[in-house]
Image (cartoon, rainbow, N blue to C red; front, side):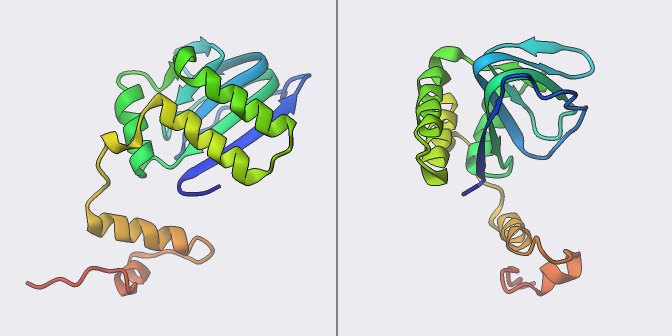
Length: 175
């Protein structure tokens, strides 16, 4: 995991069993390198080689085979670009195969050759960048970004508004 992106490759030739309905704050890009994949929410089932799930969207998956899961921090520039480009009315969307498939082959090669987490992360980031360049979206206001950065740096501690206010990253305000 690095810079708001996490990449996981899972081999489940017999399937995952019941994945259960869940939601998470990360944007999820799931691709099937072999086997079958379906993502499901309350109103739709999307069966495709690659599917995106919006941040905070309730969903579950049914799959078997070799799968790639890429999670993207929605407040990052890349996450904001993905949200803007992919998610309008729907929380689950089919990804354009022609944009992502060459990068999925790179992910497969990285996994098969056991090239390590750094290579896997670079291949995952390249796959996301192929979907949408991160330069399209603006980051949040600098004051909000400093609080996000403070929270990310202190995930192992209780986070409160008071601790954020006392943070050295807190902007100095002149009234």
